[in-house]
Structure formats: structure tokens, C-alpha cells
Length: 260
Image (cartoon, rainbow, N blue to C red; front, side):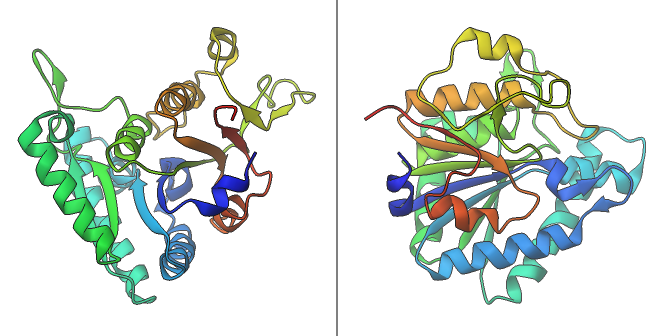
């Protein structure tokens, strides 16, 4: 079932806020360093990687305290990008930043510009680092430019570039039959080819202090990935080296993939 993963060429990797930002101390620089090392190695091996990175609002909130999410994003995005730039430079890996709003992917002229930019970056072996432009996007009235969260954004990016694989790195090991923090006998689900309503109802809606997504959001994203026939792996990304195991086809996390 996971043999095809070894052949994945274009890979979208989404990293959640909980892996990058501590509510007490801000950005976890060691996490950025480890992630940069692994992704640079994967790029050198020939993989075409797109990183969807959360963390800007969380980083800005810790830095500034009680401010609007817009101000937090404006400050946090600079901090986050600066750290990525410094860490990838150690591995001679160039990066490019793309801050998106929904209309970039839905308005034809904007979508064309996005497609051209992302394809040129990939062709030149430059790592695109994508995030929502949280400092200016809104979700009010008729002009709704926000994404639901970066889970949705990562799926839309995967669809846009016709990705072979979407990897969602979070702070849980995968999808369980029940909440493992409540039921110690909950079983890890290694593979799903379809998602029914029961899974949504059983999922825990609780979020971290700085997060917008959650396990229900991951299930919604997985549903979209299955519909688009894109394989998706949900796994614990506390140690980014897990990416090597995932791409080697090992039984890591939960694989969402249609039956052949």
C-alpha cells in the first residue's frame, strides 16, 4: 500500500503551529533547524518539496502579547521567515516565500501568476515556503479571502501543483479509533480509503492555545485529498526525521489513500 510513496516526486509538507511555536517561549528554533536539515537533504535527493508552514500568528502573539491576529501575523511572519532563511542557508538551500489569500487560487489571473511562480521555483530547486497572508486576509461580508486554516491551504496547494503526496506533520501520531488521551486502548488507524461521518463525530475538537486546526480539520483535509486522488499521511512531526521513514514507505502515522 505504501510502495507508491517511495516514488513521490512533488510533495507538499504542512507543519503545524504546535511543532514550531511554544505558547511560553515563542518559536522553537531547534525545530526550525532540524526541519531545515531534513528538507534540504530531501531537496538534494531530487524531491520537489513545498513547505506549508504555520506559526506566524503564534510567534507574533508570544512576542507582542495581547494584540490583534493581524499585527501578530505581520510581526511573526518576519521572525519565522528570518529563521528559515538562516537555517536553510547553512545547507546552501535557497527558499522563496509565498503569502497567499483565497483569491490567489480562485481568481484566474492570480492563479496563473501563482502557477508560474511555483513551477519556476520548483524547476530551480528553490524551496517554496507558503503561509496564509494572515496580516491582511479577512473572512467577513462578501469579500472572504481567508482559508479555513493551513490544513485547507495545504490541500489546495497540493491540488494546484498536482502533488504526488501530502504530508501533514502535527503533534499526534496519527488517527486513532478514539481519543487516546481518554482511552488508552484506542487503536491507531494505519490506513483509510474513505472517511465516514462516525470518524468526524468521534474526533476531538479541542485545539492548542495557538492553533486554528485540529483533528477534525485533518479529517476534512483527508476527505479532500481522497477526492482529488492525492495520497496523504498524517504523522507526528516532533522529530522531522520521520519524513525519511514516511518516504521510505514505512508504516508511519495514518495513510489516507484510495484502494487500488
